[in-house]
Length: 419
Image 1: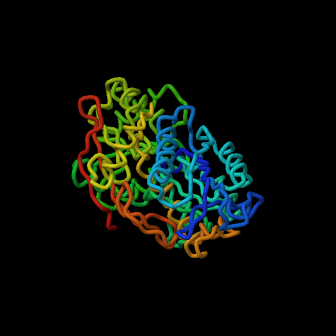
Image 2: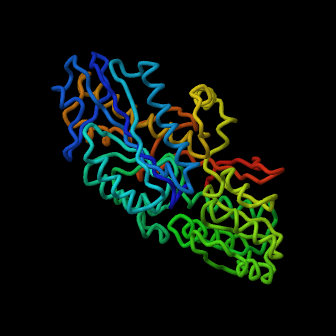
Image 3: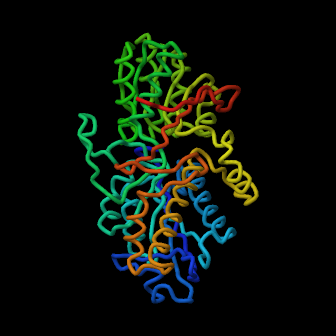
């Protein structure tokens, strides 16, 4: 998600590395967080401590997504240990809770930078939170990989809309595709497949929601559709009756909402009760079982896009699903579990490469070396091919449209966006 306001999960993975000729994974900080290798003299037989940070909303209204992120990163660490993926390396996790709050996210970023042994961070969920974290991580040369951010600004810069792409922070990567892709994919589905021509566009004024809604609206109009009205809500609002009246009066045959499920569910419910009996369509921010519950039985026929294809349908994800189930996590991996696992594994691969390129010894500047190696990482992950382009964005641009049917999200269409 998220996109702009997605959750940030910070997993601190502590890895005890016993270095061997094959190398191992260690952690070193250029900003006071000593590298595992550095603290042990680099490459000797003693244990080396390595940490992968996680930041996500582990509590609060978006915790259903944040817990899935945290658990999935933890699972990656456990699997690496079980497979002895890097001989002598042992991983553990330590997660930080940003509660989907940008200020808290920035504080967490600073804490992770100052934590001894941290070599990479997975998270956050929300794009708005990530905006406050990027510079903190970049200044410390600490790699950050979000499994959910979708705001184009984070990788392409503030002027991406005019075609001026500029990567401001070399430390930022993501395994989720951007809203440029998601918003256009949604507009194309609504106009070409669902045959809707008159949409009312609403957003929550947050980075993710407003940006996604704008991209959607531009593409919908380009295709020949009409935006019959626009509006905004404040996150946490409870009464959407006035907007419902406007939508019904505008003659809209659909509503597009840029935001997340805590507000989208009640909005959908009140739209129908207010006479606007049309489908509400949103991005991955609403794609969660909680949306269906919050829609109070009025979400039937509503639509959502989400990055990638259903994990359960991917051969590459079978082991992940089986291992997650076997781990008996209380909370589901949710929308971003697979992307979180892949983000953590990308850091693991980068650490492995850094050690191997240093003759099997943990570099004294492991944090910096992990960042240098991350852009070259390529492997088949839970969600398919994992690799990053020159802006740090994922090269995997698959998306799926879901519809609420009989009280649950069901896949309608999957595809790869090609522009």
